[in-house]
Structures are given as structure tokens and as C-alpha cells.
Length: 421
Image 1: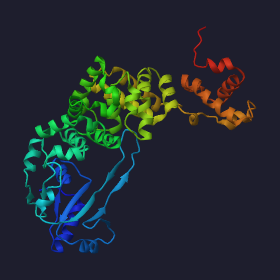
Image 2: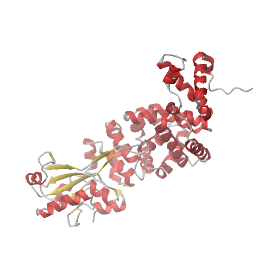
Image 3: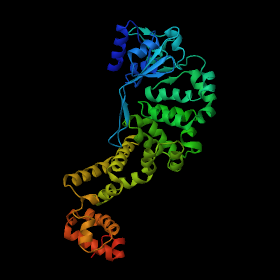
Image 4: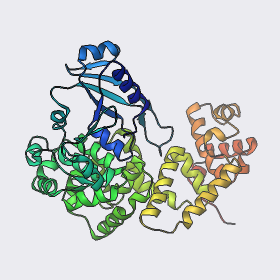
């Protein structure tokens, strides 16, 4: 018997009290059977929609046969290494026309064409439960004919590979091979959504191997997918083998994927329409990961954090750790950097302008400059001596440094240089 969320149980009980059965069906049953917590639930009943809408007057009417109950809440991540997500469920209550067996014919795959009555008894006209157990994706109806009308079904099928590790049956596999060009020209938003969903599944490596084997890399990274050099092929192979050992963080796994393509990184990344926030992190990954990797002392690490912020530090730090897992690298440098950061935090060493004991007003009051923009610029420069030595975060010392930077272009230019005596 399915483990139904509390909201679905309450809906079921309400219909049962009114004398109606509720049949859960479709992808929600697939996901729940495989241990997921589905967001969207299709609930079928013989109850007329007029009655349904009397029972749930605040629900949304979707056409003549469906009423939608939305119990979701959007949870915005507080950290870049987490993912925004919805909690709760969306329940579509659909009034049957004909039998439930007839209704299940609308689904694309046998693993979706299954249902469960209120009392737990199954509805399985095409053997979907067996296919779920065997992790074998089979179509309902003529898959080739469906793909000609809806080529995006190719990506839906591949999503099942990444999420749950399904194998494609011969008909689906052959259809995808025969319709490769159709798959490549599917709307990029759809491809990106299916790609990202598959990449955070438990079998992302298998998914990547399959799209590469089917010649579909071009749909993800553009024409560059046709010309991958030997090093990139080697890295891609290791990514496929080990990505499932990394945490299922969408942006991090996307970073791991795109970092493979050293020669055409920017072009590969720009091919699909990633949102602005994702691009902000991914565009810089190729440059900033090596920069962070070579932060070997307190000064370098504080400079990096001050320039790029905590969020980007944590993202690139976790991305480097994930690369160590994927490429089976030594993590001594990572361990050393973690230890350096512990010291910085424990000693409460100043990192940002806000951590300085003076501000722009102090610089102006000291008579160094009467231009606030200039004073704020000098504050930024003061981070250099403070990052070199935290004891320089002293009012008198900082004002002396500020005066020197203000007067001397050479001091400003060479402030990072340690002069030998």
C-alpha cells in the first residue's frame, strides 16, 4: 500500500465519507512506489465536479473535469549549496469518464499507468508494477507515433534513467535513436528542466552515459558536443562513474558536468537557458575554482572571501570537494584550506570592510580626503594590510595606511608586494 502524504489521506477520507472512492494514479504512484515524495498527485473519482467543488469551495477549477488543491509552500534556500524547493502536495481531483483502466491509457509509460484504490487494492492493466520492480521503462501504446507528435517524450524517458536507474526497452531505445534530430530541437527550456531533474537523481551517471551513447550531447552543450578532446572524454568517463557519490545539489552537479568541457566551457554553458543566478555561479567556476584551490595561506583565503563573498566561497569550495570525489584526487590541499579557515573564524580575523575598526567617516574626519567615494575606495585598499596581519586592524595604523595610499599611487599599486630588506 502506498505511503500517502497527510494531505492526500485527508482528501481520501473526505471522499470516502461522502461515499466515493479515490484512486491515486500516474507518476505520483510511480514515485511513491520507488520511495520518493511526489509533489503532484492525480486523484481519480466518480464524484461529479459540482460535488467536488462544493466539498472544496476554495480550490481551483481546471477545465470541466479537474479541481486542483494546492497545499504547497515554496521554500527558498538560505545557502547556495542548497536548492529552492516546494514542500507539500498539489492534488488534481479528476472526475472519471469511463473506467479507471480507460483513463490509465493516457499515460506514456507502463510504470505510470498504475493506480491504487482508497483501500489499497491496485489497478495495473498493463503490468506497470512488474516493470517498476524490474526498472524497465516500457511505453503505453505506439511510442514512435507519440514521439513524432511530442518529441519531448524522449527527454521524459531519459529522466527516468537518471532519477531511478530505469533501463529503456528496445522500442523506446530504437525510437530515440531514430529520432535523434527531433530530440535535439526540442524546446531548450524543456531540455534544461529534464536534464537538471535527471542530474539530481540517484543514477545521474547512467543518464549521462546514455545521452552520450545516443548522440544527444549536442542538445545539452551545443555543436561543441561533436568535438570532445581525449582529456575531456576521460574526465567525462570518470564523471559518469563517480557523480552518484556526490550530494544531489543541482547547481553543484551542473558545475561538475560543465567543468568537464575545458576547451569550450563558456559556449557549452551558454547553450541552455540557465537562470541568471545559476549563470552567476557557473560562469565563474572555471576561473575561480583554480584560484580558490591555490589559496594556501590566511591572506590569500581572506582576499578570496572578501572579493567574492561567503556564498561563492562555499559554492566553489564544495565544488572542489565534489571534484575530488569524482576524479579520485588527494584532498590534502582541501584539508589544509579547511584548517586555515578554522583559524580565521576562531580568531575572528577581519575579512570584509565592515570588519575594519574605522569607516569612511573616520577617514574624512582625519582630514585625509573630503570625498566620500574616495574614502570608501581607501577602505577597500586597507583590507590588504589587514589581511596580511590582523593586528593592523588598529585605528591609528589604518589611518596611517589610508594617508599613504591616498598620497602615493605607487603604494596603492604595490600594496600586495612584500618588500625584502
